[in-house]
Length: 158
Image (tube, rainbow, N blue to C red; front, side, top):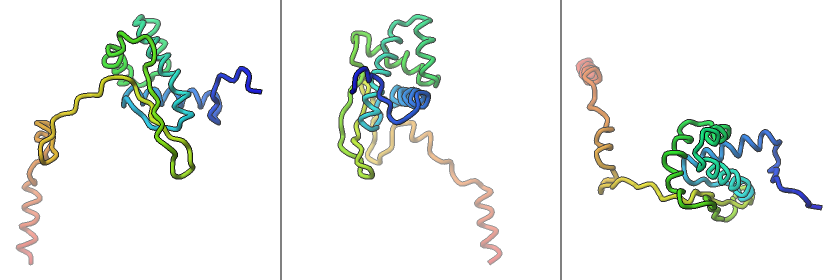
């Protein structure tokens, strides 16, 4: 009988399952979308929704409760800085699961779980595929003089 089976065990111990779901929640907050199996996505959805609902209270106690699950400082800051303002008028339903199909190797059903936030704005890309000023700043400097003198020494030997 399947009475009172509320926890999807995912073939893991409780501590492993909790750690895995916490890591997946952090990845979802950082990347806005992750690709995983259907069972993991369905187990992750209530975890993330509870975290966001708790974080929306914006009290010291709620921040401490969220920090018990979200251990990475960058994810914590992104949650409070970028994600929560977008969910100000929404009371629930912060995530969406989209089924993609089956994985080729083992036939596991794969889906995408994503936060229902606005997509981050991309920089304009020119015809050569380089981004604006940032790409120009990251260009490699010219070859050093030490490398050039070594090449000249090799020529003079031969």
